[in-house]
Length: 228
Image (cartoon, rainbow, N blue to C red):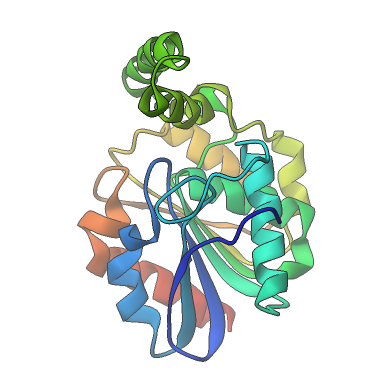
């Protein structure tokens, strides 16, 4: 890896890796870090170019982020882990679980999507407009260039084929809010194509892990207790 990813860590038991969404950092999971740290070694990392992690020179793609996760785990000598991904973090987790199924002990996918068409148009249209504006000024402003990269992830990615999901072997919980920015039909499609995945649709929007953390944590905890 060309960079060292920043991460927060709490607890000393089984590894539990948390992957945040676009434009965020590991602190999004503050209520999960504390809650699960008595039973797990909770590791909340900052994705390349997010939070305190440097951008580096490698491509700014979901594919690259999944490779970064592989290198990150190798660097900490983590052979496999429970992985919880939110939004783009869920997309990274899906890519990772498809490529490295033996590295994932259990998978929680919160608000992920296979492609940009999975996002409701009311959310996606402003993203596309913002991306076009940021691209226009990217050559003149470092902030605009960074914004264009971030928005570009949501305009052009992820690119996960439905049939690839069959390669995921870990017990999987697919979880979203009933007012999520991801189409409910799309979330159901993800769950239906991962072998033996459990689907949970909770009351709330895209940010249930942060805004309804007590209910979210219990849903994740119940799932993990069943599979162990």
